[in-house]
Amino acid sequence: MAAERLNDSPAQAGVDDQLRFETLMTELSAKFVSVTSASIDHEIVEAQKDIVRALGLDRSTLVQLRDDERFVATHSWQLPGLQPFPGFAVKDLPWMASAILRGDVVCFSRIDDLPEEAVSERQVARKFGPRSNLTFPLKVGGRVIGAMAFGTVRHQREWPDVVVNRLRVFVEIIGSALARTRAEDEIQRALEEVKRLRDQLQRENMYLQQEIKTVRGCRGLVGESYALRRVLEQVEQVAHTNSSVLLVGETGTGKELIANALHELSPRRDRPMVRLNCAAIPATLIESELFGREKGAYTGALSRQAGRFEVAHRSTLFLDEVGELPLEVQVKLLRALQEKQVERLGSSKSISFDVRIIAATNRDLDKEVRERRFRDDLYYRLNVFPIRMPALRERPEDIPLLVQSFVHEFAKSFCKPIESVDQGSLRALQLYPWPGNIRELRNTVERAMILANGSRLFISPPSDSSNNSAPSLLLSDAERGHLCNVLAMTGWRVRGKDGAAELLGVKPTTLDSMLVRHGIAHGGEQPKSLSPMTLDPSGSGSNSPASISNGRRADA
Image (cartoon, rainbow, N blue to C red; front, side, top):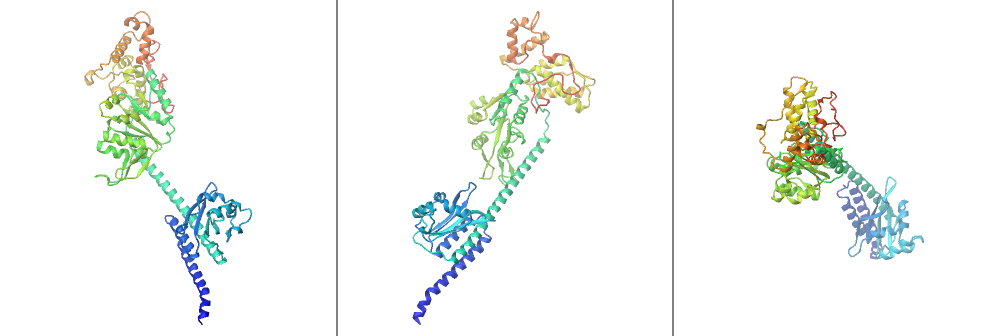
């Protein structure tokens, strides 16, 4: 009886081993039916470990097929003390790769069992193992997406049909799980992209609604002066680049209009330009406006808010009055520009952005840097391509064109049929220094239009008593003013008896050079602006000023 029990023990042990293996495969198969994309990588390695131990193997390797038709090892488990199958060796198995791509199972118990054409496989197997191997293709919908191998390194073994068939079914389940979780990941990425685009559209919509509420009297640039043409040439030179632009000039000279032109002529014009007036926002809130905030980031932060850098992604960010930024915000702005990333207040997550910066200021930033009120490193980063906006007193020949444009605008809104502008009024406007520049001129024309009673418009410059600005002490401004006064006295005649050159005691050619330098006129001829001005009913005007606004005429 004892002998019979001894004879039955190996068979019974085999039955028990087979039962445990079947139970293991059933449990693993059930697990991978519902495995998630977050845990599938861990579960595959755990399954490899359980199968290797249950069958007395040494290691298991899973490779996946990439877009470039290469097999790459992605999951591996081996007994302690053994090395995983080297990923670089996968490319050295051409015979095995061809068999797998055909959907065939590769199985050998000894290296010598490999066919003669498997030369590379024999060399790799002798160098890195395996001595015995069973490899299944990972197939989904008839398409091979990878392979899963089981093998021994330290000894040889046979592969019973029951083991091969059971592992084949399990590998098919693994392939389906990988394909399903891949699809789930792609769907999740697509949903996240949809959410990102939706949030971007919502932010842009909110921003554009705010922009619509902002009154903007000027839509473009009008003029034919040398000073303005020089600005427009610079705009055309830099608009198509991603370089930072710094617009410098007095208040009311049209810096924002130039920023609009730079954006409209750039490759980023399909997205709205985002604006931020650094002087109009309290210092305590400017940081959240620039970089955004999370809900509860500070007292009063009742909702999550995207910063202007996020809203301006792949577009242009116009920082108006950048010289008003507090020093502590300048530091963070510099870091954002250097790293091209921002962090919302109350968050440690970095948000990347692709933004072209246009900054504007009416301050002398060189002086601000010297007096340590503006960081020199930020100044150098913003001042890649500076554009100086000329004051209106530097381009008096543009005043009649601007007046004509404003008159058309207000005639339409006030329903007043103005046919012409008084010539004396135009001369008086050209002699006025305009400390408020184009904005002041526009307000002056608007006031005259309100008071107008006939078809001929008379415009008076602002009274000196209303001008609290101190007169300029610059020699260039004094010289320019004197030239304008003498030209007005001579009816803008440069040459000949009693001409401006004779009164000034200089050669006509010398005076021509002085006029060009000051941007007053060209060729010593009377500006077109002082010929009697009759308003064109079409609104286009009789002159052809240099302008940029998508090819159409605009106001100022």
